[in-house]
Amino acid sequence: MTTNVYELDGSQMRDRTAAHDYLMEAMGFPAWYGKNLDALFDLLTAFGAPTMIFIECADDADEEILKVFSDAMEENEQLTVIMED
Image (cartoon, rainbow, N blue to C red; front, side, top):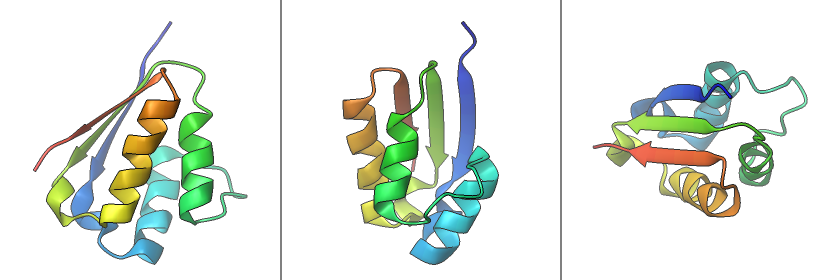
């Protein structure tokens, strides 16, 4: 099974509104993505194939968004998130 790999730039996730727009494009989220933390969690926990997400410049990202990535990783065994400064 192929692993999905996403490389994200934390500096694009400083502002929550801009972050959701960035994530929608960078991760190919569907048009119906709700652009809020609950919707982000739902999509991250729905990955059914191995998925690795690398977040560079994580120090620059909104803390609540990073928490959603961490929480989703705990919930979904297919998801690995690596945050780098």
